[in-house]
Amino acid sequence: MFILQVLSSFTLIAVGVQAAADSPKVQLGRTSLIGRDVTLLKQDFFGGIPFAEPPIGNLRLRPPVLKTTLDTETLDASNFGFACLQSGIPLTELSEDCLTINVFRPSGVMSNDSLPVMFWTYGGGFAGGTSAIYNASAIVAQSIVRGTPVIYVNFNYRLGPLGFPQGQEAANNKALNLALHDQIAALTWVQENIGAFGGDKTKVTVFGESAGAIMTAIQLLNPSFSQFARAAIFESGSAATALTFHAQHRQIDWNNFVAGVPGCAGLSETNNTFGCLQSVNTTAILDGLIIAQNEAPEEFPWSPAIDGEGGFMPELPSLLFAKGTFAKIPFISGTNLDEGTLFIPPAIDYTAEVIMNDIIANFSPPAVPFVSIGQLENAVTHLLDLYPDIPALGSPFNTGNDTFGLSSGYKRISALFGDISFQSQRRLWIQTASNAGVKTFSYLFTQPQPTNPASLGVSHGSEIAFVYGAPPNATASAIALSTAMIDYWVSFATSLDPNDGKGSSRPTWEQYTPKNQVLIQLNGDNTTIIPDDYRKEGIDFMNSMPLTFHHRRSL
Image (cartoon, rainbow, N blue to C red; front, side, top):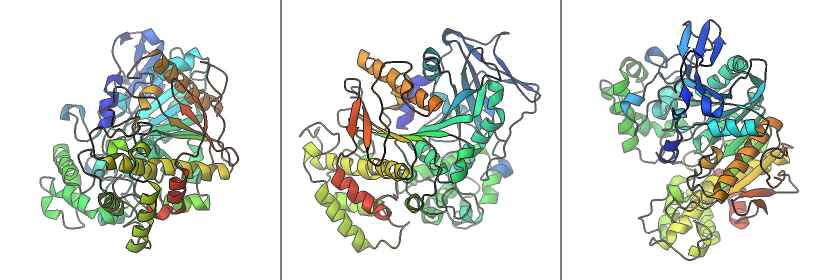
């Protein structure tokens, strides 16, 4: 997983960490949590705290059972918990008993200090990721330096077929979007318990990247979500970024999963698989998960699904946007300059025909059957006219006619993919919200990434290291940008405005309004306000047809 590679250096390092008699303690009911004293940074860390019962046996493939209190007198909370089942991580680091939550806080915080809370949801294509690779020490440290201390929380959620079951049986059993239920359970735990750590449950800002931003944005489709959070930050993701579809349309992915589970393979073509899947061991489940991932007809087979009335997504997000059906809380929403490059295989010769077929195969159907193939073909033909095969206009942007030894169409399809999947979504979402009177801010991250291959540019996920205070190329300008970004994020979390005047000296980030549609360009050499009008004609066309272009099959 790309995000795991990017953040592998973020793990909590034991340098300066003491686990001794003077370790920090927090009392949750009858249980004393024993955390870690991060001495050098004057912080406390509490990790691996269960927020739900282990989702195994009869609790597998069911919504989480909330666990706000524990059964023991003490709990060793000095380390992160296990990652949830996924491919690409050693089995020794995985467990189905993975629904745990972690807290970073300044040292010496008392239970009545009522500090604002920043709640992170990681990305990873809904099939990968873990809270353990996100070390928030730099965020908390900078919040202390600037005089606005915060508490940071992250958590694990179920992944792949365990977090996003597909198929008719899952729909019949109301077992869709289980990872979204995990997210709500973790937020409920925060409401119940963050006060014991010195946090204020009424001052929670939810933030996340990619799949984590998408999940968080889907939560906002429920107007009552404001009971869990007062603000949000979306990094490269909105509620309509991923394909929105009925789970029955991915029956093949579920069948592949069941067929790969030893002891259950014979049931793969039936709608009677849950009982068997709840009876096998974790190793068998992991076998099926890996096989299904390898045999999937698309890159991201496990995604949120339309779950009907009373669910997280009762209908297509674009229709809910139009109705104003979303929580009206302040938010920041932004993207990176070259969002599409990471998802485009470089070795293909991207002719106009290949690009057209790819878009038709991956967008709109089957979620929107009332968009005919003829309408889709006409729309794509016009879209290709708006994105001509001119390398200087393609992504990675601002690289002239350089094609990096690849097909000239690579830059064309990268621009199209990035704009359809991320840039147009962000613009539609923030315009809709600001028109509804929501306080919003937007950004475009353009910091060059010298550690990336040149063909990727400022790719998807590049901003994360800067938000977490660990820019990969630690030049003076990169470090200054990282500090400024943390200040913007923390300022917003503590004051609902990124411009509280505290911390580093940085440009004023103007609010996004119907009459002032602007972004802040985040760049170490040129952080400045710019109009939100890049590729306006193409993105306007996409946003004029949201049912055609905003519901992917493969992201």
